[in-house]
Length: 49
Image (cartoon, rainbow, N blue to C red; front, side):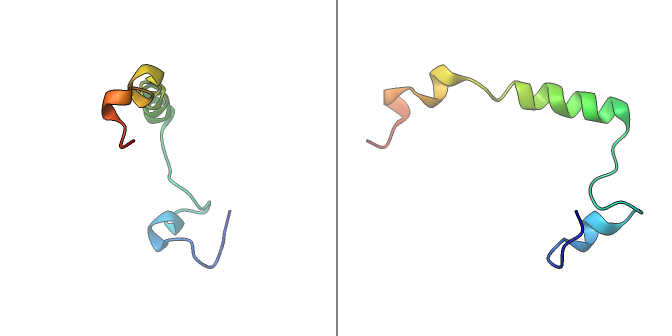
């Protein structure tokens, strides 16, 4: 979505955002799905409390 505070790097094409090929989108989604380790984020040993 076009907004006044949109970084100029995200306005380089006709559509605002990051232009990704379909293969790049799939790789990005695969990476993001690896960031869901609930055991890690709830480990008391890694907590500040």
